[in-house]
Image (tube, rainbow, N blue to C red; front, side):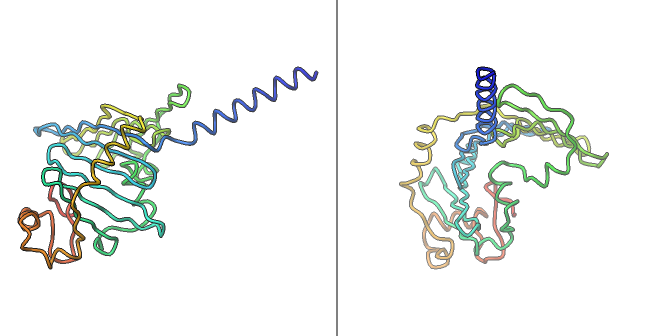
Length: 234
């Protein structure tokens, strides 16, 4: 009886440990996505993630956006321009159109907000140890159709297809790395960039780099707007 009890205890402990390990999803990672749209050239996006920060690297534009979650639960941003080894820092007050909320941070951290996922209908789930793939689609026949394959352990989409009026955009996870040294080396590569605070740009418009970024639409003079990495207004 004691032996059976011991075996049961060990099995229970092992299962409990496995559950904890699976629930503690991988925070540090480097994910590469291929993004395809109708009649448009395929784009690449890399996501470099560690605790309380996530970096989006757009190879085609040679621009990175590094988001930080601060202790007061607000977000700040540093935009890096690889070609110039320069960066611009934005505090929460510099981004009035960005909603400072947990859902907003999670959207940056895992590409899709929990609210967006909750509005989809789960079709099925496939288990292989900690590897759990969940499939979702629209709950109703709306104009915009969404198909999502989600990995809850890594908290990232494996694939995402959005279709509207016969136009489709597909995000596909192409590569995933979790090597801590590789991630640290990539983050350290930004340490030598010369940074300028967004609030100080008005006093430094004679700087050729800043003047060029303003002309290209990556920087706006006033605090009323904020631009994404491809120059589109957010």
